[in-house]
Image 1 (cartoon, one colour):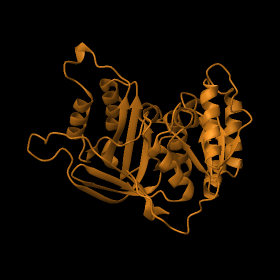
Image 2 (image 1 turned 90 degrees about the vertical axis):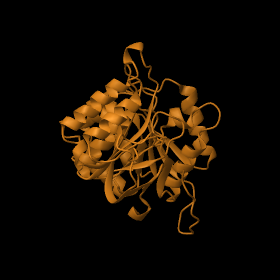
Image 3 (image 1 turned 60 degrees about the vertical axis):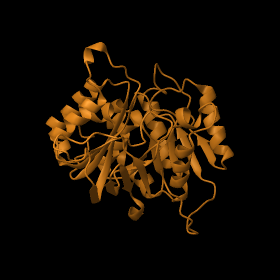
Length: 323
């Protein structure tokens, strides 16, 4: 899934992690505490934002409270600003974010990490500043699990902290060849392209706004949870009709989980969506990226220049050269 390379130049000392709640209120306090204890047990200095446990209806405090938390995270000087959890809450506060402060924090070395609803923040930062954030775990769901956190997720997070992270490799699902006998996914090599994307529903909700990045010649990755395949197709159709998909060098599908097919579907399933998408765009459509609402997730640099290679079922997104 990923490789470790020994390198004396990498810093293995304790890191400063700033935990804040920019979207949904934390409901599982035990998981929150477990996550913090776990990161501290790994030797890191974990700073918890003053309003991390605030609540206002479903949110972690009102809009002004959550905006202030984001700006405190940016001012913290932390190595990583880690969201406590995602769920809905970001899109409504995008106009209030001081993007220059975020970009300066990233320039100083703070990595903003999260996923799901955090996709709104990541793509807004990319659209407004061009800066890179990281698609990855959140505190409550990933670090606060009962039992042990997923070892691949934990190793990838450690790679980010120590500067080891160079790429994410995975095996795509087995797919029958196309009708003309060609493989479902041809061998691909993209030398350099901007990686972007995240949660499909959140990303699609930004289309037509100033917070949607105009990425040309990029590699778009998407994932989702509790979205039936026809809804996934409808969102992809919106990006298709908006001209977004035609501008990409590749589309990479992560994990689509927690939905139920119905008798009405009569064989229409996620693979049907993949097959259809491949008839609509020239760019390769890759599957099974280990990223989404699943325990085993890699960390991905949203906005970074990456290379992509596919040989048979083996795929690799590589950004080691971008450091």
